Image 1 (cartoon, rainbow, N blue to C red):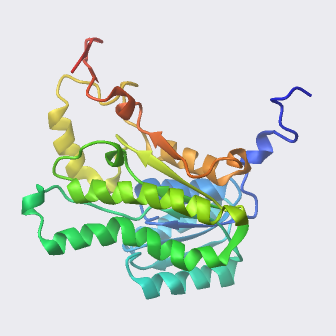
Image 2 (image 1 turned 180 degrees about the horizontal axis):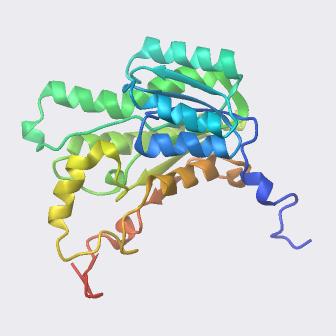
Length: 273
């Protein structure tokens, strides 16, 4: 065996057979795609969302994959509700092996048009949602578990009209690194995925505004937008044994937008700033 051939490395190491995963904001978009992917790779899945109309369909897909599902309607900003849901998931499914913090949201506004109430809302939607779920989930997690926080490429560059949102996504990345160090002794790995150019039902309005700014340009260096399932696939990787030595890291799922910086690919194939 050569040095780079890890013993036991094979296709089965990507499977999540009989693990228990909790996915927040699972009613649509990346959260829904992730919850269903977890089930298809063998996990039982607990899901919650604020919108009661979307969860039944996601739960049906999880159960169609032959896995158990716990579903709840709640707000990840609600500390007591999160505590109760984590306890219920642990009771009904068993110790939590994977926690995916996906819930979040934003709105477009210049900072001087963002009221203190609006600022507080963005902080709670994009940072407190993560801290609440980690606080009440990590004590119920198996040693060797995995936490994946969904951030955004906005954490890595200036974000005009999304200032507080971007700051909170950067805060989640920093928080992720600290958690990776604090809980490494338990074998719990903590990582981020940072998506961009992945249209979801929750950002239809923002996507329309973005499209108007992209006239004559490809959206990414890969010359297309992404899909929620492509972000879910990276989350599954981070949850699996394939990523057993990956912690405190952030993986961009953005088609190369951060790498490109201010460079854009024109429709004629040339590049420009």
